[in-house]
Every structure is written in structure tokens, then in C-alpha cells.
Image (cartoon, rainbow over all chains, first blue to last red; front, top):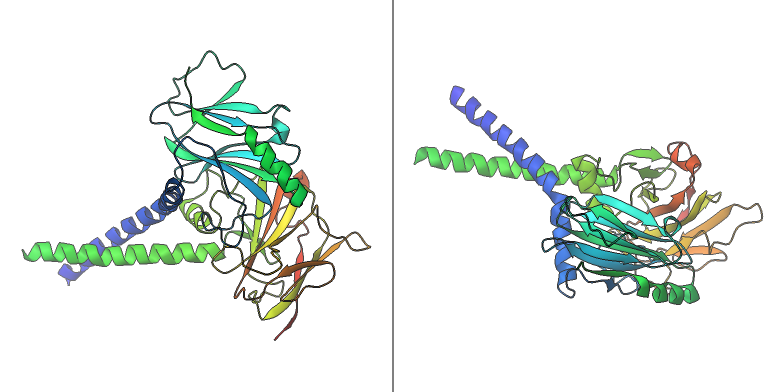
Length: 176
Length: 191
């Protein structure tokens, strides 16, 4: 009796540990899968203007068909990355996600000047650039993550406008 | 040797129980995202770093890369206002008053959470393209065949779901998520 009790308790405790560990790892695992799909075709620290969302789109679940997306897989291992969020004449937002899917920073077109904004993304908080007075400095909680820029379009003509405005978006390694 | 076998057996059983229960709980949480308002479910912690591990896992499965609440609020439903599962064998009518946000949309997704192929290439209705009724309210018909006014096709959708997105929502919605008037979803008939 004592023998079974001890082993049952040990199994139960281990099951709880497996349970919590697995649930905790699900977002990172799903993020890794999304990264793998994207990295099959695109480099890190490079802006990607995603194809229009259709019923064929399978990169992420529940995509919005009313938005055009620009995205960038950022990797801060080799240093900061400079992001550019171009102007928009309709709703647009820039959101930053850590490798555990947390949305750790976002802003929209109403938060920025008409000409757009530059963002310096760093992992090391000690990094304080001196020659980027007009850029917003954002510290990422993880070295790797995703930049997602959404631009709303109302109709086919507006889609052309949104696609043209994507030209103002950028993502590249920062060099001082 | 006997002890090693017992340890391995213990690890295998605990892994099966732990991982199996984790998958089951997270799958359940994707259908019970948090608070409800009529047929709509929402979780105010969507996209937020304060979300618990179960919310974060569930959102990663059904709404990866969601925005934080200050930017956008998401409402999900798998059911009509009577509590019945949304299915492609039935027609529905979504109705309500326009929502106070910069813009909003209702999008129809198949059970796998991706958009559904359809000949009309219609997947959503948005506040800026919506035709309003004479009383300034709106109606959206869901069914396999096009209708007058606003229409969302559900042909071959199986058991589908709807996501209502509000971008830059008004404070009146923020402050009353459980009671704000959200669209009603009425079943209009089934095959």
C-alpha cells in the first residue's frame, strides 16, 4: 500500500509539472512554427510586405481580410534594429511581439507625425544612442520577436493606397 | 535496474497525464475565452503581458498576434444568441447598432480558424462599408446565397465562428465590456 501511494504521489506531482511546463511553452512553440514558416522565404531584420489575405493564407490563424500587413522577424543578437513606420491616411498600427507572443509595444497612425516615425529596438537597456533624437527607443524583452504593421483598407482603390504606403515601412540592423 | 524501470514508467505516465490534460484544458479555454456578453466572448487580457498561462496559450491558438486592448478589442463567438452552435446548415441574421470605435468588422472563419473559400470572395463586413437600415441600425445576413444588403457567405463552413474586432474603441466600450450592446445573432432557419 505504502509502495503504491509513494509512486502515485510522485507520478501526480510530475504530471502537474509536465502540465504547467507544456501550457507555458505552447505560445513559444506556436511562435516558433510561425517563425519557421516565415523564415523559409524571408531573412531576419528585413521588412516583408505580406501578400493579400485570402482563404489560402495559412501563416497565422484568424487573419483579418481587411488589413494589409508588413512584418519583420527581428533578431537583436547582433545589436539593435531600426524600424520605420511610414505615414498613413487611414488606420494603421505597428505592434511588437516577444518570442512568447506578448504584445509589448504598439502605436497607431494617430500617435505619430505625418511623416512617420523611426523606432530603435534594443535588447540591451544600456544601449543609449546619441544620434537618434527623433527615434523612439523600445526595449524588447526577448532577442527575437515579430514586428507587425497593419494598414486598414476600405475597398479595392483604398487597397492600392495602403499598398503604396507600405513603402514607408522599414526594418534593418542599426549602424551608428 | 528495477528502480530505473519504475522511474521511466512513472515519467511516461506523468507525461501522458500532464501533456494530455494541458491540451484538453487549452482546447477548452479556446471555446471559453473568459467573460461573455450575449453570445460573444472576450478576454480583456488578450495580447497583454499580464495574461495567465492558459489565456496566453488559448489566444496563441485562435488569435496569434492579437493587439493589446488599448489598440483593439476582440469578441469571439461560436454560438448564436440562443446558445446553439453556428453551422453552415443554418442561416443567421446579425443585427444591432453601430459600435463606437474608429472602425470595426465582423469576420467569418471556418472551424480551423482560417478564412473560408467562396465564389464571392466575401469574408467580412466592416463599419465603413456597411449599409445601414433606415433606423441607423444594421443587419447582416449569413447564409449560402447572396441577399440584399449586407451578406456573409457560410457555404461549406461546417461549424464556423465569428470574430468582432473593434479598433480604437471608445471608452464607453472599455468601461462596460460586459454590458455594452453587442450585435445579436438570430437563427433564421436550417436545412
